[in-house]
Image (cartoon, rainbow, N blue to C red):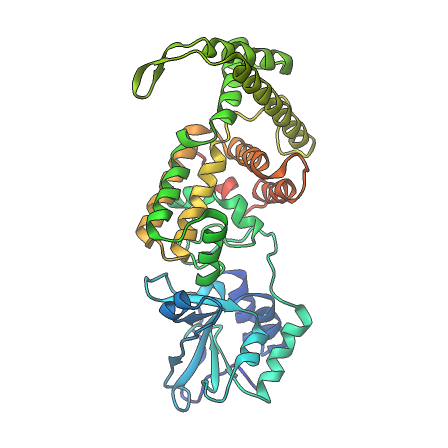
Length: 417
């Protein structure tokens, strides 16, 4: 039985077409040669998206409310339209999507549902799948063979519908470490990601974001580099100043001693210059000062050990060090813009503006993609890893290597400044 051709009266696909991603390319090639085993195998290995009712999804997060469509080429007109990642429509406020594996569509289908599933409707890689048994068993079996689609670390690029040059592409590339780690196209501005319910759940559980206002606050804080961890920036900034004043290399013991001198001097009180102007400060108790010194010196130890490991792994060049961890916030700001769009806490214009600002902030704080990357990795490790050098570190090393070596990487094709 043939699954792919549309009903009679429709001609062959257009002769010229650029598939948005390698997924649609594989589907198109398989369909063109009539290799339905390869077609279904590709579908089974990737997420299959479908439209859901947003209001009902918001009211009952544990239940999926699929929305069906209409296609005059199908008897009765009713279809279940599904999409691969590169074929999803641009995000709209009241039109949202979820995803599942291929077999799921056969498992949840009922006789009241449309008799036909249409993959990527209207595209050259389109296919028509009879929804119900016994026909559904022929295509559902492919999911059983490959298992549930999982994140696969990979450098992927959206060739159609995603910017490849300019300030938006630059800002998107600032979030590339996380997008490569999750196997998502690095330049997806019109973002659906893990699907509307999962994007909302992720923002709620990891960031405490449950509303448009809370997303705006979080996005603003990530873009404001002066709100980064002040202790981390103090330690790194002091070393950078010493290196600039004394010709490069900074002995770790000297760095620790400098921290103690600066903090004890500050503890004496007096007048300091702040963004608000000249401010008088009271002396700090000695015990509190010494505890602060001990904490920053411990941080220095962590920083130097991470840098040593990054040098050993080829991530950080010899005789180089991390100048700032602003990248940790700016890289996540690039991602947060898209996460907010996926959760419909912002619109496409707001997300794009935030992405561009993240790129500008990165260009102010760093000189190269390499510098930006090591700043992001160090910030992530100081935040999460606790010197275990586990997945929080290893995942970023893998993504860094892909971004600094593969010919299609934005870091090799986009100027940093």
